[in-house]
Length: 408
Ligand code: PMP
Image 1 (cartoon, helix red, strand yellow):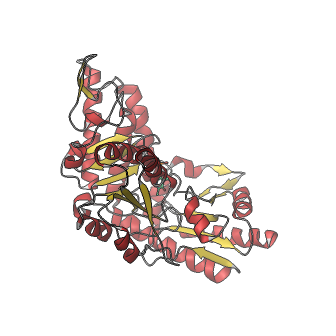
Image 2 (cartoon, protein in one colour):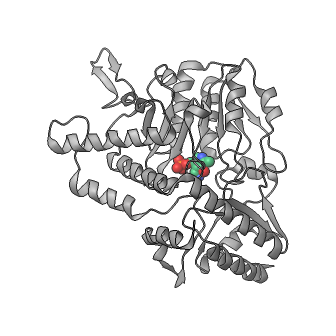
Image 3 (tube, protein in one colour):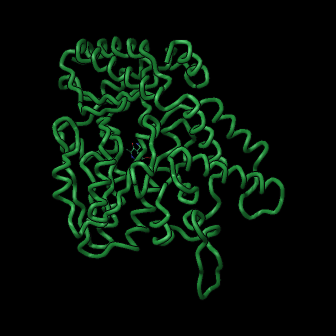
């Protein structure tokens, strides 16, 4: 990506013009949420100004148009993930809701006492707690794949955890703390040798890596719109039809039914069986806009740009910040840098960087078991997106030097 392209991209994100404490905003908290381009913001306004009516039920013009837009958005998501059919895409509130849906519905259909679920040590709470709740409900056991000192999954340990009691494996594609890109294709192949399905938490992957669910052979793949330049409150679950057809609905209500009587209710077909109530049809269409925007720029180009930021920033930090410790040094790594400096508490670094207009995240990043296993109080995390620049990294590194000087 050349400088002109990058400046053009930045100009499409209105918030990047904001001043924070009278300083240029440097937004390095993209792992938590990304900023929105004008086309996404405009699509939300357009929806409410021109296409707002409740979908699926109406015979009138606006309802039909809004329904079409929502269903077109489903097709965009299906194509984006490489799904075979659009019915395999369920709109959810995001990654968290999608994982809860599968943990509940898959658990109801396929799990009983004594069964096991495998997750890994580097999961976000969203890919731990729903499985723990399932384990409690069904008296099952949660098994955990350990990681090595670089923050990479121990694949041999994973193989030895898989057994005839394993009902499902749930694994992050990319770690939100360490940046590790997990070998999900291999993880899936290994599970499938024992007929065990795999859910992939793609929250930190889809904004950075081209994903093809068919190529991966993922059984379930989930992500959040807000982490890929889309709106909050909308995300998607991809599930192979063969699984989605076998598991019960997650929530009951309007839309997900075929017929209702007080004696018996029958359920709607895919994907509606899993979309109870009025869906976020404004959010879905704005999400589709975000995905089209990403595709227009090209994930290969985005990945290359972010990787150059990752390399540049990592080198500068290692060479110039005394006492820095990078947490997460996997060979395959996404543009996330978690770090600690000496004994300084991450929160103090984050607070002072904020005063200089630099937004980073500090703490356990919703991955407390991982942070505990590393024996650290948390990290400072800088996570990059397509609109970040090397000159922002220069300002950041200089600011960090100042902050460390003050606190050290
Ligand atoms: N998984 C991972 C790897 C994440 O980074 C996040 C968000 N930080 C989530 C799940 C949860 O996403 P959401 O809050 O959008 O549901």
